[in-house]
Image (tube, rainbow, N blue to C red; front, side):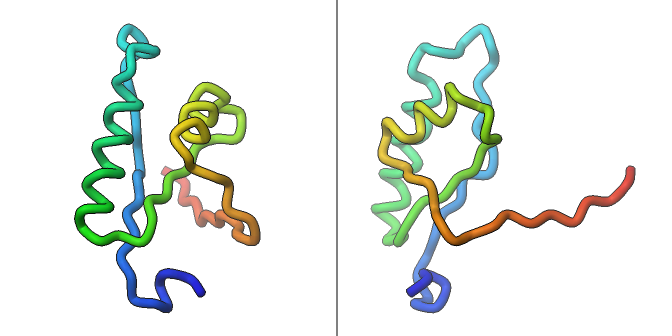
Length: 82
């Protein structure tokens, strides 16, 4: 059953950016782990995030920490011209 139907709390990471000079130093991992710890402490049922399919470094980090792809969902956007 989806968390939204169970009236549970879900956290969503919308943006995670580390400047190029500071990448591969553990900052992103530390930020993710801190967020996961906070979500658990707050009673969240899950933490979700998204990235581009070709962002291999991010996907490797996220799966190494334990994030898994979600099947059966599609991401839909309605874009507006500037």
